[in-house]
Structure formats: structure tokens, C-alpha cells
Length: 315
Image 1: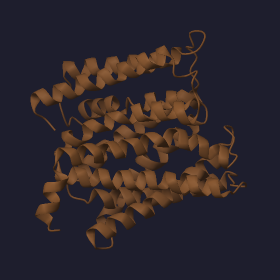
Image 2: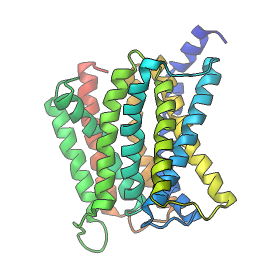
Image 3: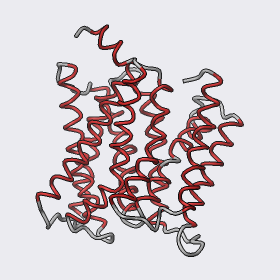
């Protein structure tokens, strides 16, 4: 198949629809699967060092898988240029180390449903960072309204249960929120660097660098994987493939389509995470009316922001 034919296929709406939704389903499945992974490896919520070690193994493997997939598709070994090493290190600290350090610890101390919804506001935080700090675009009324509506959804999700639960745990919901901030900054830098770099090279090598760093940190602080089972190894490989396949496919779709045409589907991540957490983790108590309303608010906020971008014809 020649390049022109490949480009035509990847630009079809149905291809983008199913490809992007597959990415979002994979990312959404990570929320409950990480918690299941903790159970299979018998990692307790208090064992922070082993959680970091577990994350390190996952992302080192994810980087290797992503580079293998990218190398096969491009028919060349994806090696970073010398001048790219600084960018890779910066991205690995933001996108892998800080984001997932906070995410893994936070997820161990909150429900998968809550985590998936809180993570859903990373779009809003990224907009604020891009507008107010990096000045990559203008902060408009629609963007402000969308951010406020989305934030109300995050607040509302903490009102679930038999009573109004306004008590937030720093090492739970707080850490999940901090992970979204790290993601926002990494997204801005990735967009900036991708203008002159291969995004698959950046993503793959930053996963490897960040993963190895987390393995060292986890091991040196006492982290140990003592319970090794076929199910646990299988789950670890699945989580690594989630990142590798989703990021690789997402990058391919972005290569042949406008950013807005693909990125809008990223808003389905919290929806898949919300639903799959309730099913796989049996968090039926979390999936109440309040949580559903919270998810709707997050979705409405996303739509408001996207409508403004669509009306203005911006990517």
C-alpha cells in the first residue's frame, strides 16, 4: 500500500472514530486495571515504594513496545538525536515520573471512578497552562466557563456516599489532581517539541528514561515485587501495551489529521474509565446519581470548550 492510499484511509472519518475510541478505551481501562494489578501483586495502598517500582516496570516496557511498534511501522530503528536528549529528559520527568508518581499513589488511595473523573479535567488545566503561562492561545469566555463547569464536576464527585463527603485526602484525590497538572505541562512541551521531532521517538524514549528512573527510585526506597504470578505478569504486560499501542496509534492519527479532529475523542477517557471502574472493580456504590451528574458536568465543560474552538476554526 503506497503512502497516498494509506493517508486516504487514515483520514476517513470512520478510521479516526474507531482508532481514537480504541485509544480512549485502552487508556480508560488503565484505571481499574492498575488497581487489579495491585491486588495480583499483593501491593498494599501504603506500600508507596513498590507502587513506584510497579509503575517503573510498566513504563519501561511501554517505551520498549512503543519504539518497537514505531520502528516496525517506519521500517527504521527509532533512535533519538543528540540534541533531543534534553527534551526527552524534560518530558520523562513531567509525563512519566511526576504524572504517574502522583497518579499511582493517588489511585491506591481513592476509587477508580473518582480517579477517572478527576483525570478528565486535565484538558481544562492544559488550556489554562497554554493560555496563561505559555501564551500559545487566547483564554476566552467559553474556555473559562468550560473550566468552571468541569471543576464543579470534580467537586461534585466527592459528594458521593450516604452523606456529603467533602473530606479530600492529599495522597488520594489530591495526588490525582497533581498528576493532571504534570500532564498539562508535558502536553504543552510535547506539542512544542513535536514541531521538529518525531512524537513517537519522544514518547517512546521518555517512557524508557522515566520508567528506569522510577524503577531505581522504587527499589532504593525499599520497593519489592514479592508475589509473582502469571496473572500479575499478564496484567503488567497489558498495562504496558495500553500505553505503547494507544500512544502509537494516537500519534499516527495525529500525523494524518487535524489535531482537533482527533483530540476531541480524548475527552472520552474519563467516560471509559468511569464505566470500566464500576464494572471491573464493582464500585457500584461509587456509581450513584451524584457521580453520574458529576461526569455529565465534566462532559458539558469539555463540549463548551470544544465548541468555542470549533466555532473559531482553531485546531
